[in-house]
Image 1 (cartoon, one colour):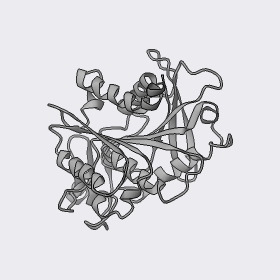
Image 2 (spheres, rainbow, N blue to C red; image 1 turned 120 degrees about the vertical axis):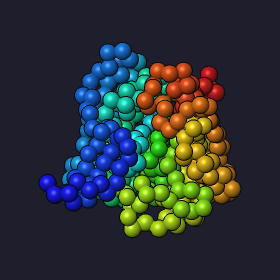
Image 3 (tube, rainbow, N blue to C red; image 1 turned 90 degrees about the horizontal axis):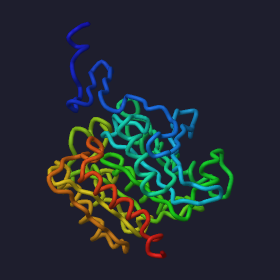
Image 4 (cartoon, helix red, strand yellow; image 1 turned 180 degrees about the vertical axis):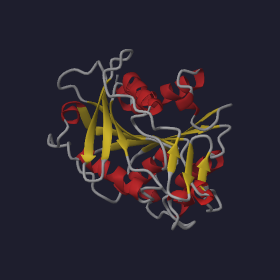
Length: 308
């Protein structure tokens, strides 16, 4: 192997490395937990194709408590990983969504969008929108997936994502305001430590790695230049911050931008002290991670709890 073959083009230590010869090494999100019935929570999961031609797929979860003909809120989850790593099938995300389904008593669809650099932006957004359209295709009792037809309440839909997945959630909610998701009522979105550009409009090398032709005025990474923001396709937004997260100021910038956009919904900001980016994934049983989960569960079940 020549020295040029081993030259690093991009590194996100200790999780990811890409070489200039096109090789990629992913040290996070590449393990696979088989879909099954979880022995602790009794949550059932299975993998389904969404767009067979491109390989876009999802892992679907239902709680053990679901009864025949019972309709539960539907959560569509988008994983993080900088757009270049992560998977619904890896242990961190499989376990996290399993816990969310068990605690919130919801149906969940965890989306497996294609990753950079093999598939550069905007592929991740296009795959995510295709997944939402596929979910919406089940609203009228049609569509191929029985679990969605039998158990999902399409009038109580939430989008949830962390890091890059939080960015995708925001962009999907914006797109839902201008494009048709007929039959779906998007009640709220939750952004967990979302990935955006800086307040000055500049972006970092991670974004330029996954979107090399992007400019600093790209509305996908800089919500301040998105004219559609005031029409965000939901009435409630929950944003989680972490005190030690180096993306914290960008997340606050997103919140400030949304509040000043003219959007008339409810924005709630929850900050966890003493924690860093993605702490809820890497130490899921910690007190602070459980507190975050409890707040997310409350957000999803807010309407139900108010009616009890």
